[in-house]
Image: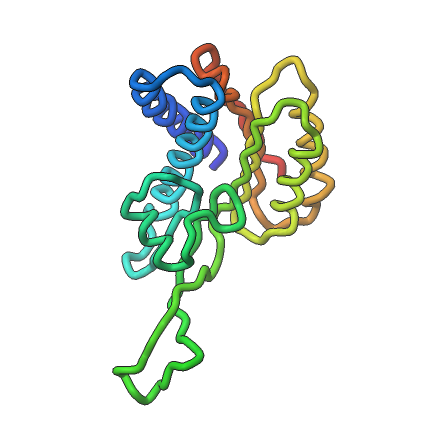
Length: 208
């Protein structure tokens, strides 16, 4: 599982980098916008790859969706908006198994009035990604969000910084706050958007 996840994260990173560089060639240089765009593409590609992995070998009658923030209205994004009126759902990425929920006004004996809504039966993946360097408060906020959530798999992503102890700090906090968690919990370190042209290393640890 760990090695498969590392390959998936590496693939998502490379896909996001290729897509970003294609768009950046057509834009006026603006570092703030470039970094924000890279972060958005990173989340998009990670979410879609996690969804594809989740769908693998699942029964065809089961429905799964990935929820994440995106400005691009792809087919999946439009479907998300139709369901909840939004595309990001509580976390940076949620991949969930969907289920039909009859509305409160549904009349079971009248098929023509049988109305349903979509609900998330269970979360397969919940992901938080925080690229801020050396900001313990921002990282702790996202770790707390993962700690109080329920999912089969949880992934926390931080910036790769070999000159900082933030990785060890994050690992210790995850162990403390998620002790006894039934989920598979992972910590990944990936290059900060500003370093995409000089760094490619991906680190991944299974914490719980």
